[in-house]
Length: 323
Length: 154
Image (cartoon, rainbow over all chains, first blue to last red; front, side):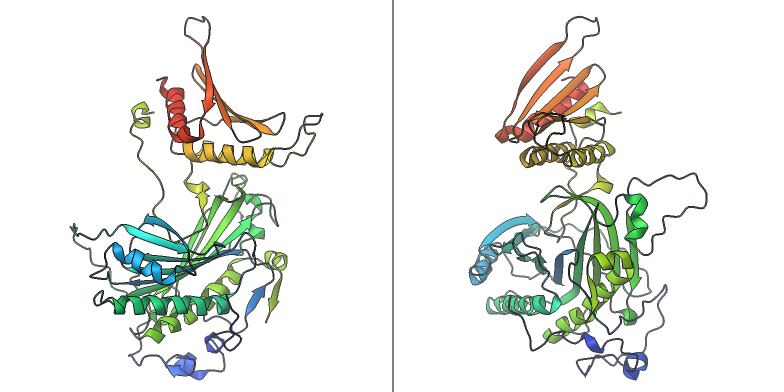
């Protein structure tokens, strides 16, 4: 990936600026443009998060091993199996390897305060198999494009040789280029009308057992919200711990999920704590720029939430600095 | 305990995910598999000469095979926790006891695998034993048959 020195941190420096009265009191601005003019929403139930700090924490050795940027749209009406191959032929030079996977299920966030209406059970008989997802990835196994009838996903993964995390500002232009090319492919092949339903960004971190903590009795050294304390002395050391938390983003723009799971990593069979931060939400419009406005909005939430959710002791181990 | 379920065990692979890095979620794994994973991890920390002689440490190929076995058998919740121990030369053994039956899997330093089935008859007569190799091409089938034999004797 090439470094984009023209646009080091697209957009999000402006978010949460305490001196920005528009951000606090009026329509939100990203890159100086006004996003929407809808009527103010009623305060949603539950706690809404603060806006991320305008400072930009970075780590010399961050535990992030993978980032996932996903765009979900209405199923392409005329997408059929041969289009997987046809699309691959347009990107094969960069992504020469492929694999077939089961399709992902749709998981659309309900961000209104209304209860989700129960969907009637439906069985669809379609000549297009909805259950296929194709992976196209590069030789170094650091970049992956996942395609299915209603999804475009771009993954960056830590490589075996190049283990450094390239940061969002280097991943974004590659993701943007591939998404633009996919959109052009859909339009060129007249695959039918489609509408973006949801965007998602996820950061997956692997926190190795034995580095900064030796077992789950020491989890409070890793995760800031976890104290490990008990009201009495009955409970002894936990064998392992799984945590899930979710937070609403302001203005109904999405929801953040934080999940930790004890896991074994397949590449080296090491025991890790997998910490995944995911934000899902809907762009403000169907305009192409809105999609990346949403990602530029959501990504700092993931970054800042990671900092908040983990301890300063671990930050030191990961080489935290403020840019 | 429902023995018949071992015959009809559904494929309990997790729902598909957009994640590319593959991991096994220990929170969703049976307790015996978590114990076994951790036992193998501890063995991987043994240094050369751990036997008081000149045995090398656990070899990567053997560790990877052990992990594949545990991963494959994870679908059988009812298996007891195995005993996992190092073998001289850089391999390891995984041993299950279930009633009168015992299943020993020996993983050689190069990652190849052998099994030994032992069954003590109820009349205290001679043990019945059978050994063999686990072939790479039949890995999954053989392991499932061995697990089934351990649990129901057939």
